[in-house]
Amino acid sequence: MAPKYKLHYFDVTALGEPIRFLLAYGNLDWEDIRYDDAKWAEAKNKMPFGQMPVLDIDGKIFAQSTAISRYLAKQVGLSGKDDIENLQIDIAVDLFHDFRQKIGGWFYDPIPESKAAKEVQLKEQVPYYLKKFEQIVKDNNGFLVNGKSYRLQRAKAPLHGSQHLTLIEPGRRILDNTNGLRISSFVNPLTWADIYFVAPLKYFKFLYGKDFLEGYPLLQELVKKVESTPAIAGYIAKRPAGDK
Image (cartoon, rainbow, N blue to C red; front, side, top):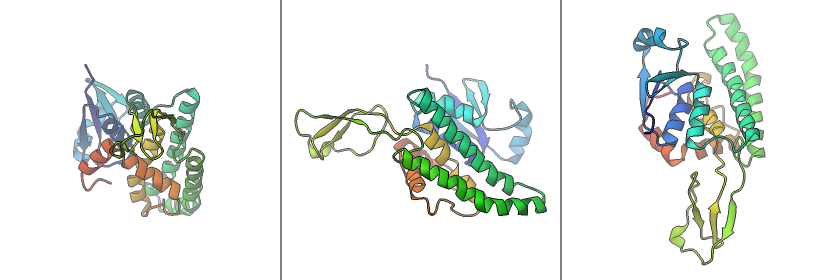
């Protein structure tokens, strides 16, 4: 029997959103349990490390956003194909944590003098990290890790125009009538590194106060690729309108 998942997190995107994207992507049986401040005050001491997100899998609670995302990626086919690709995924995810901690550390700093100093540093740090990510995406054909071409095999007969599909989904055969080619097998270029980067961006743009992806076209395209994946797009369309 397939497991039942319950995600516990605040009523924001942030570090819970990669998990939501992965659960939606895999069309898994899951419940999105959101907390306001009052509900969190009552529940905090019941959490493994006094923090969220946590994922309930058939009644057993697991913590840590990255670990949960890595687990779910294995369940839905978004891990790397080998140890090297999994290493590259971990590097990209860790780099994202370095990036988002710069923004969060500045935004949540309660000491005015310290916050002002961090704001000066942030003006250099944000473009530094985004340039790194932009280059990574460039080097990987539009993705953070697994941007490889799919294998093509000539069809025995020309394909009907109605069979032309452009959307790549894992595990599906795709027909392309443009050159009479049939894609019989392929490597899905999307990995959970792409999801972990894209899913929380809305929250960190909110903290930063503006869209920091302006001037980074490859990252903007990556966002479109992830968010236009049908299952994820369906989740986004239904999530709370005020989600930040």
